[in-house]
Length: 134
Length: 91
Image 1 (cartoon, each protein chain N blue to C red):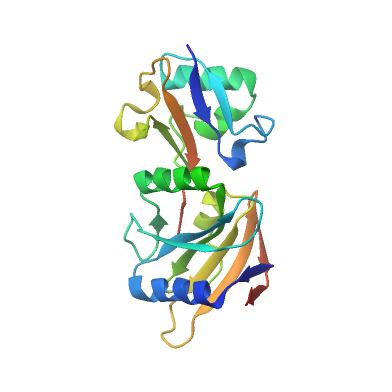
Image 2: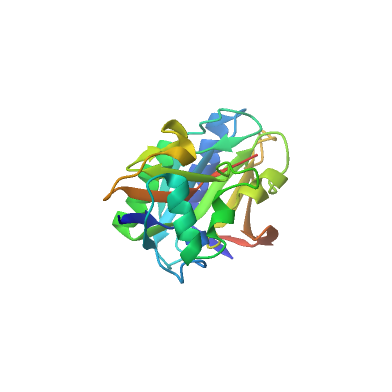
């Protein structure tokens, strides 16, 4: 299960809306081993695409150096789908490489309702999990 | 020649959980071969079957992405720091 604050959930959805029709992406960091998503970090989608996202490679290095310095890890890795459901695509699965992360998908295909779902992706296997907003 | 190599979480199963290991090599590919000699299978996670750097992984030498410095032929010197990170990307 993913437990996340309303404030951070709303910030992720707002980021996805803002970047629509391109995909938005980012992470929520937390203390190593805590499973608590606490620090919201929106990232630039270097691909600037409605069908693909990628963290810029220099940004990625800087981010992981911060994690090292702060004893943090990416608790949530999020991105948006702008025309399809909030479910990991084949490309998402092939790239997923944080076994401890909650992969959050937001769909902005509907302007009124935001789909916000969370998954574990381990060795190519997708498992949806409940999201508790607190 | 000792070069520090930072290992991402997903590859620490190969290094017995170590976040950072020492390796040797005058070029990045030599370093990866040396890593693979100690941590069998690691090379296959970094290099494709046709011998190029895997698109799912980023490797940095002293903060420079090796895609801009000669890829697997990037020259290494004693004291260099190598960081391996999985790309964060998807569709």
